[in-house]
Length: 452
Image (tube, rainbow, N blue to C red; front, top):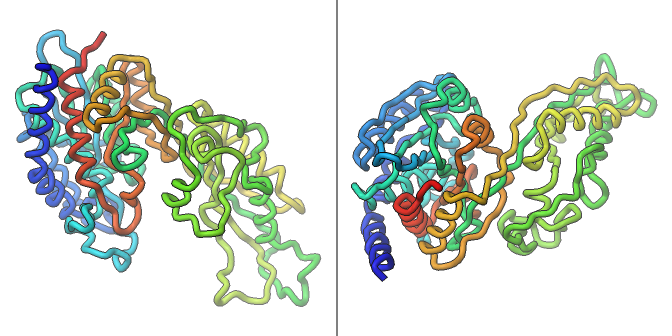
């Protein structure tokens, strides 16, 4: 009973801090910390990092400093020692954000936190400044009642994928060493459904370029026997899926199944904004296809546009192809099989180039340790319902690096980024209830976690 009363007091403390959480988030959203100097002056990103440093110091992490990662971005690193013999917990977040991606599509100012329909709107409100607000609220609620050692790291260029923090970890392994690592950059399966993300897909991106002629030629005079580069690219891409839309790259197993939360087709259709009457594709459940199987997507094609195109046979064409892979598949193996498949599918002995653009390993969390158990319990208590697990289709390359450098650490993925947040899109928002519940869960976890 005493523990219940103690938890109730912590719950009330978190609830009482939600006004401060809104102030925090408003201040963060107001700083356009897009880590791309072509779009935003770098000084704004440094300003954001300095705000984060000062906020964590005020929240009880006295030893906070700015550091430059090898990609030139500014990160924030802080530490608060715990009692002798206590475990150490690392809290991760990132303070850079996506660009607006179409300011004319926003219903409220991009860089001003705006409340509408019970949600808080603004770029970064969820991804991932909302998660930083979660961390800060949890620490403020605990105050001096922190029985573990604490480290915090806030990354400055996660959205750009430049790998600065990954390189820093490899060069300075002691800086982030911890017994449990809480990565605040995912989210619940749905609002009010406490969720731990236990797997992340890896990815392989390639660019395919086809040339067939020295120049475009008149389609009336030469079309027919003249090899059409665009048609060749289309033919190659068509072999990557079968008639049902299932990925069919030779050598990749497409039969995996997901045993966590079920993703019902109608919920998926709504979350993915699938138009009425349009079929879902692929053989298997949405969860299987999203989190347990390789899936290919054509991200873009270089070809003559419809408006302004000529009556000519295209001499060259290109496509950008992305392959998402389950955690167990090595990116190098997946890329080799993808390239082999594309080369075998190329018709007419076309001139073919396949350029490797990006590769990242997936991640699968350990679920049998004390940190996972403590976080599951904390989430269940905070939300009043049992926690579940899900995968994420997006890659977080840092998680694979953390797992490699700190193999004994438990890595826990939580966050405020549920489907309605529209991260990486116009009108990004966060449900303040998610910040409140997750801050409480994190505070409960930090209070109760013990290393076995």
